[in-house]
Image (cartoon, rainbow, N blue to C red; front, side):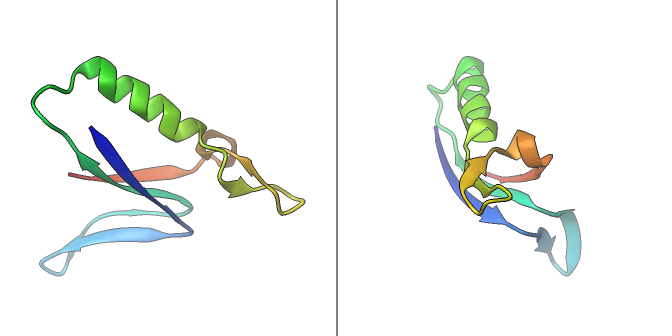
Length: 77
């Protein structure tokens, strides 16, 4: 299983001129899954994803996680 992560200030997914999902600050994640991936793999990788400290704090340091900013995720597979 692989994730390609893009940090965004806002994002949406539009298919055939119809918006299917939109978020404010958070992640857009392209997900690659293979047959050998398990539910445990998904849980482990998602817990790592929401814990990544790549959002800026009040001092401009990348010290906040998705949980800290109450961000959202769009998953594409």
